[in-house]
Image 1: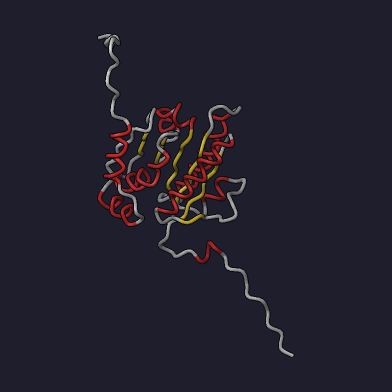
Image 2 (image 1 turned 30 degrees about the vertical axis):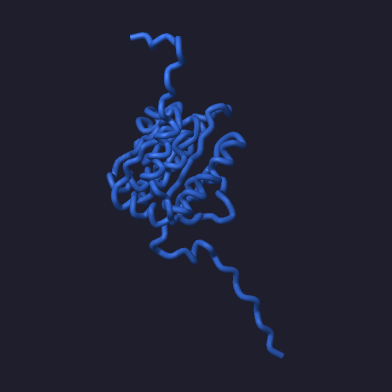
Length: 205
């Protein structure tokens, strides 16, 4: 009697094409951050990246980064020791970055919004810092950082975002159906200043 063994499970990492970039997202903080991280994952996958760990990130950021091309840390400023946790993770990623210079590290969330300048000063190996209103810009910022070979910081207090990505990034994003020109025009209309109300005082000079 011939017994046929069941097919071996497919290793998602091994099945990833060699030229396809992968990502991992670490979420620090509140439930809203979990939702934002899911948005980030969708944006990165729309830009052609795949999850380095389909089952979710592990507990060791350095181990996760060893199998990823992009590491995104989504921060929260309201949780206890938020900054300590962020810089602890970034410190562990520094050694990985030295061993793999092509690794990209992005920091987002409300702590990034709050400490925008100090993050790049304290951790110059970070490639992208983006705020809570710039989540949709993440793929473009990563591509811009690769193109310019320098850190990109994109923080806005509102959703008034006007992006000017390099030609290569623009073509890639067009390939996944993102019309940046239309997005910019739409946002411009949404954020057009409202007409002054009758009798309202002019702003102080």
